Picture 1 (cartoon, rainbow, N blue to C red):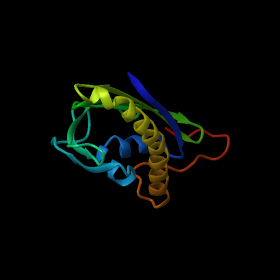
Picture 2 (cartoon, rainbow, N blue to C red):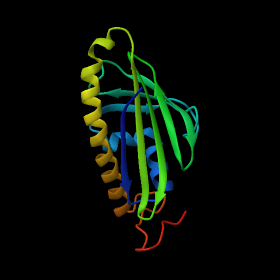
Picture 3 (cartoon, one colour):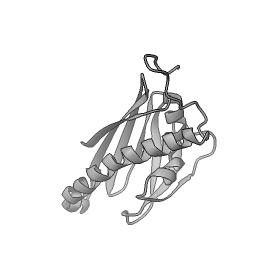
Picture 4 (cartoon, one colour):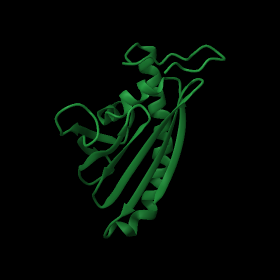
Length: 162
């Protein structure tokens, strides 16, 4: 069940947004709710990449797996646990850079069904705030010249080069 859908416009090309955010270790730079995240599979980031992640509000770390990977258009990650979560990110080029759309799906299991309504209130607020945090992180990296792909805003009337 989709419990939260958000979108944000970022003044960076889709390739830069994809490269930065699809490696979920970058979440340490912009998500104040994450405690740790480590890549636990070998090789480059892509379909099947797994991470061990611990959010500050979670009782224990969970394994997160990239279950869809379509560079530079989007990706999907999934984790099990007491509240099973699937997050799908879609990137669309815009005249000013990229529109990021996020769908957060969650399914409670066991006793977590009882606290799920409280979880929904919390996660909807956090996911909306995360859109601002990741936008700020990407645009700050671009301004500092740290982006692997150009994040410059195209001149007025032109679209971002692909």
